[in-house]
Length: 636
Image (cartoon, rainbow, N blue to C red; front, side):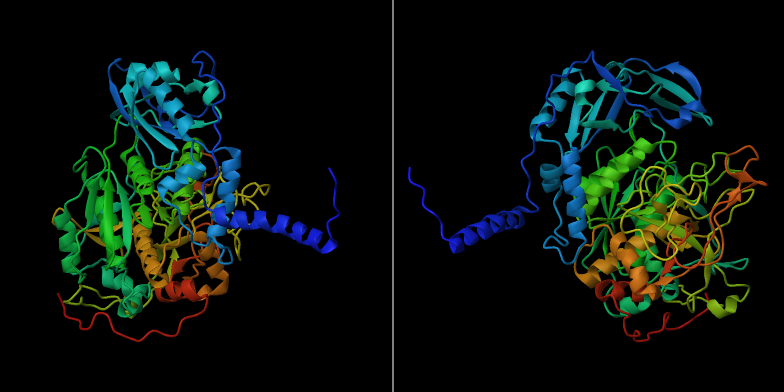
């Protein structure tokens, strides 16, 4: 064979071409599924197992063990959580960054759940092996999620005990009977690189955190006021957006729940307070739980009514799932919303103690991470126990030290805290003495705010906030006031919550309609769906889904700080038992508000008009055209 010398110019061309082609190929194929490799490389040997620590529920340690359940007790819709490979995780982190980078060709290139599963989930071959393993052990596989990160399965208690090498016991806790696994579970060693955990094998569920109490017909009671939708629109500068036609029209917001509601209550609420007629769409995922309790129904009413009160033109889809002996219905609803791409904005008002279940917090990080790639903005209430996130807000004093809501502390959701209006005794400056006959409103202007803290002997009711012990500080969590290090240990970076806040106090609480009665609700359970409504309007203004709002939200705090009402007064410290962690002179020190970001209210509350327009342009919008709300005032 004779070798011919290539001319220098041709050699240079070939060199450039060889460098250019992979780049072009990468651009063409970016966003497509790389070929998934099988990760199950050995046969599943049920005799060789590994323990998954931290897979019992913390409450069994305070509960009274009543012994093993009967063998044939059916446990339905348990969730086997699966994890991506390290290579997939690296790919996913890069893709999420590109989705939020305006200079990237993949900016806002949202995936469908199936596309997510094909690229970042478990391979079809591995999934078949895992499903076959469950079924050969006698369990019934109910569903494989579209995102290929969860498998729902059911079985009897004895079958589950044998598969996961644990025992299912009955427990008495606070006068209620529960079932739960008594020991940490184990899985075959062959599955250790692909199975993250069984999310739960118990029927302990997160409690609704809202407070409800009766209002007087004139919406004013003892120096307090009942806040109706047009009051909110006045206080938070939402009315000018409505005037411009930005009211959520064409947008959809999903609400997660585990108790059904009466749609007539929603219709009455909207009619009474001047909102356009629009019934929510109720999606029952599995068995209809019906009305579970007054508190559960109240949470559903609050979330549905107030997400639609803020984004008054939006479609509200309420997804409800029945809790089982193995899984909280809220978890099933949240999974359904994400894996079926129900809406580009979703709100959930439940939570759990992060320090008591780090593995569950990791599960939520995985779920909300998938939501972000699909363009879903996930809004989560930060909690109502102040800095004592493991204690019930309705009980005092706190006994378990610092913690945050593990559902709200992931890097892939907005955590919404609480503020409290501070009229300073000058109610007439901020509220009219009578209510509009058209929409019952009486607020005049924006009302100064401080940190929501109504804690005392009746409970810990105050804005959830603090430091995650599970998640590191996200790259976007920067800005004036964001701690450089953990304020408690000064040695590590962590995710801080909340991100933003809205009013959450019983003082001037949210009006809701429930069972034909007018009630007042409070808590971050109200602030979260209200902020979800604002994000629905942001999607309308920008004419696109926005995925995880936080990268843009934190940038906006420095670019257009007038988008936020900076809350600089107050603390989320709460009463505590003398022998509890972090307790000093009967108070868990908590965190204080200050200029810029803080761990009580985040960046503060929202000026909706400035926020929505600045989101789209990064500039301060021109002053809105003034239209007075309400147009006339008549005493009721």
